[in-house]
Length: 178
Image (cartoon, rainbow, N blue to C red; front, side, top):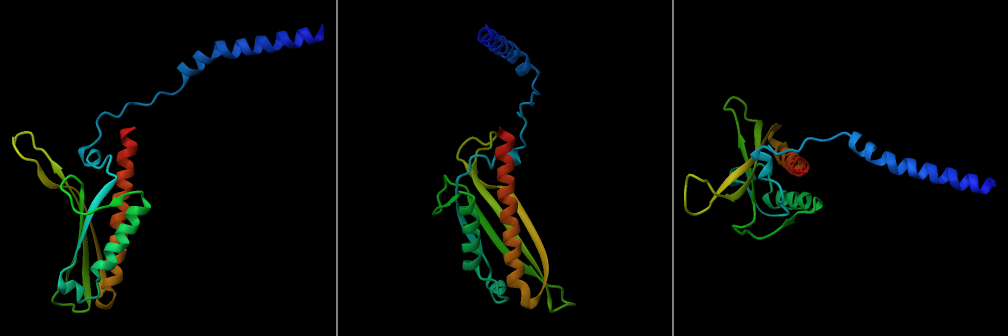
């Protein structure tokens, strides 16, 4: 007899849970659908491969900035984020990193290091019928002030920060699309 009571209790509990499940699902919090993702984010969604150029003028190279070292560093960061770096192709987004410097005539030992990271993509502008255009769709600019002998390290740091910011923004674009 007690076995029959246990089976009955189990059946009652199971039926109660099944009956309560629809109520629990409808009472769950709802999340708004994100339909208005800013274009600056939307244009970064779905990028899984890029081409890359690092531009360092000779005057900046003379201050200790090594273009190939910066390129390898950026490639490594992109690959760690599961992004492949391929040869330049108009169908693939292109990242252009440009390192420039500026000095004030009053101070010869202090240099401003400017790193510009642009994501260029083929886009269509609706009012212009015809061929697609390749335009910067996202731009990051990082500026540091360094002593003349530290320009190379400052450029590396700014490249790291800009690349990290780009990857964080791409992750945000993916998250916003969900």
